[in-house]
Image 1: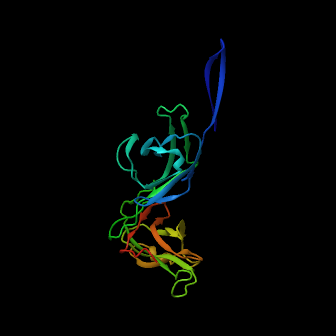
Image 2: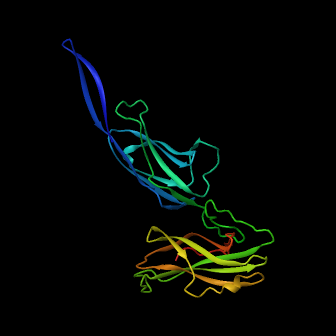
Image 3: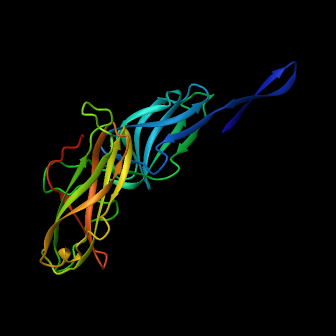
Length: 280
């Protein structure tokens, strides 16, 4: 974005308009939309900038709610390491920490603060990104509810389920001569103690593979789901296939979710089965 400033000077009795053209560009480069960040972990907020020595403010946006992450950051710094969820103050809306949700944006704002060469300029994420709660290590706690999809309990219905993510493989070029081919999955234990008949099981794993965030949808191999095991009064264990990665040097399960769903749309979220060894 180009901006122009004008000033007036009097020279030899003549009024002269002097045009001082200053090029100031600001563009957010991460997060731009589609990312999934885990609350409590550190992620870089990055941008490109060209222009004078200006300062900017970083804000987290969720609808009408705004949190100020940091202020008075040199624009030329072009990166800020953010401990996801931390904030300096609530700018707009009710207080409290940012909750897990899938409708966040980051906004950068150049603040003149008395610098005549700086101008109010903003850059915001193009799309929405997601913040999720970290995986819980203790049993009996629900983890990472799908944003906007709280558990639904039907009248006269109850369904219990727990899940345990797993990964298998050896890092590429490791001391054991691993090929770097990793398989991911989760084991679900389900118990239908109510009257509702359930038809589907869903799972998702959020991974960090070779330092990059990956999302894997978990499903049953073709023909492997025994539907009758989800009938009222039944209990069983099921293995879901969450896909694979090749050329893996490092792999980490950072979060996950699983739920069962009835034919009328009721969803019952599963809890984490046991403490999960996350790094492989």
